[in-house]
Length: 377
Ligand code: SF4
Ligand code: ZN
Image (cartoon, rainbow, N blue to C red):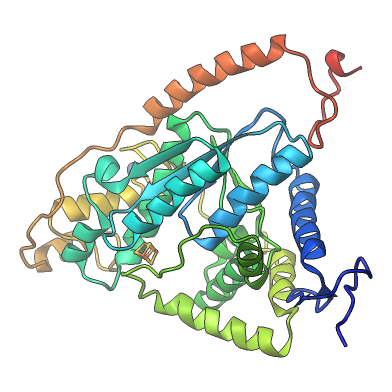
């Protein structure tokens, strides 16, 4: 006999929620999924009315659902946000070029402005040329470091206040496990934070921090969203793969394991006598860094000088350079624009926006308003 939905008690239950085990109907699933994200946003005060938010969009399921849900919630609860799609083209033929086509369709479907920044344009190197140079062992290190900066560069070009990414609960639980296994205390203390300050200027957050991957897939499928599901051609990230498999095994016997690991990670505190790296600005490009030269600049220098192991291997850069065989250069030298320049430009546009906002009155019925100014009395 068909079961009734545990929530509305009227419609037929068609799914069992991976997160709670409840049997519910399609409409109730959409409602609870979206409402949980809304509570994550409001309870953690992720945005302010008027914020310009860049949705890190890759065309994959997480970021496609994120764009759809952000747009839905922004309209439903009158957040007053300006939304943008922000994509990074790493230059991976047969993968990113296809997934960016999906993002371009999403731009039309959701009617959001889109900005694409590419490694080739920012650094002079595509991932294809990096992989030709460094091989397939450390490519994800280059890609991850460059992507983080590329998103911040794109955000400054658009004068955004904040970037949201589609990292879900499974990703965060995996990262916690990886950092515990590696004994990486600084990363462990940061990886559970729902919001960070990014480059010190633009905020970053993960509205899907508590959303299960299975529910995101279910949502995308039931809403018939247009997303790209192929794996990256250069995806050898074996270490994350082990953590992922371990997490899947745990989830199979105890579905709450994902959320339990996140709560445990949040509850961990770094002892006061543990020295954590202090942050400063990169002397070359101005990006936030725990060293005088940031990781992206070191990696880029290694590529330019034909010693791509620089910044990856543990040996000193001098030793690496001595031992290095001649490597043909495949990229072309591009000096990335200094962050100070980008920030200065963004700040000017921001000042103008604030001036414009000060002369317009506050709309009080937004779910995010905390304003106590005269215009709200
Ligand atoms: Fe980049 Fe590695 Fe991800 Fe591919 S799998 S997009 S190379 S980080
Ligand atoms: Zn730098």
